[in-house]
Image: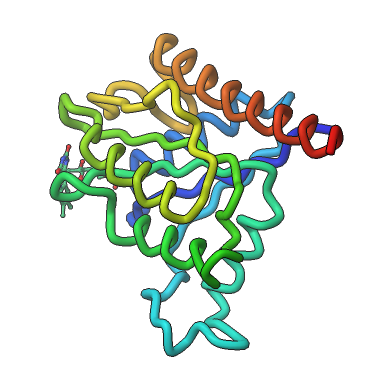
Length: 188
Ligand code: FNR
């Protein structure tokens, strides 16, 4: 069976490079991976008052999609040296209920990008830390930060071979982690 991956974009805007990176990855991996791209436009801000027996539709749907995926990619822009609020908010929903969140034990891969020269590496560190708090199994290596992203994706595909290899290599590391966990679970 092809691994089922969920790719979450941390940007809400229609012309987003983060979403473009996900679409290009989906196209590059289509033969081997069942890849779904998700944007967070319908996910409300986390509110503990609304996190009881039921949750707002967008939040419940996000949780269900994370739970159903073998692994999740978090592709975030950097806003003021951190991940976007939308992305942090997704981690917050995924981290609850405490010790039972959809992110607990989930293999995840972190990707940041920027039209600038730092590739969002500061946001990457913070996002990794929050995902660790949620109990996700964050792929340790490589650190996938994409600088000058405007020169690297266009019309749903990578325009730079090095970037394509770098990112698909990261996804391979995520798939390896998924297989390791499955083998471990089978061995009891
Ligand atoms: C930015 N941008 C930005 N870039 C960066 O490399 N480091 C940063 O700290 C910030 N901070 C920041 C704050 C806010 C509020 C905005 C709107 C933008 C620029 C950012 O990288 C650029 O807008 C990207 O194109 C955003 O990602 P998407 O929407 O293309 O995925």
